[in-house]
Length: 96
Image 1 (cartoon, rainbow, N blue to C red):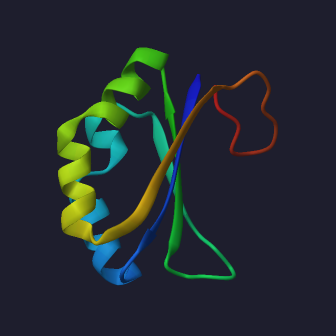
Image 2 (image 1 turned 180 degrees about the horizontal axis):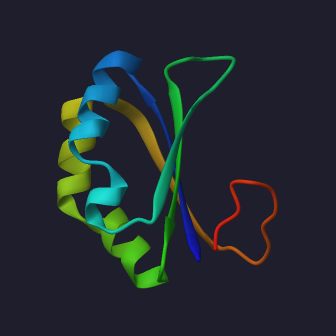
Image 3 (image 1 turned 45 degrees about the vertical axis):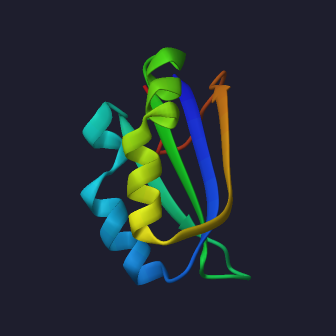
């Protein structure tokens, strides 16, 4: 499993969430996604999603449609992306 973590600031969470729901990672093949809000800044969003291959995660990250969706949803500032390989998991939310 490959994990893509996206972190960015948004103008308004509610507006962003509507845009996110129109283009979620699972629509492009992610096995799951988790949306998180910073406890210090509710307009700082971290999305974590799981992919079967690094190529699929990179393709989603680099898809111009993602950038367009982020623009429409009100993402501002630096868009941070990180891809890692999951090597261990535990708990009830464990990836298969």
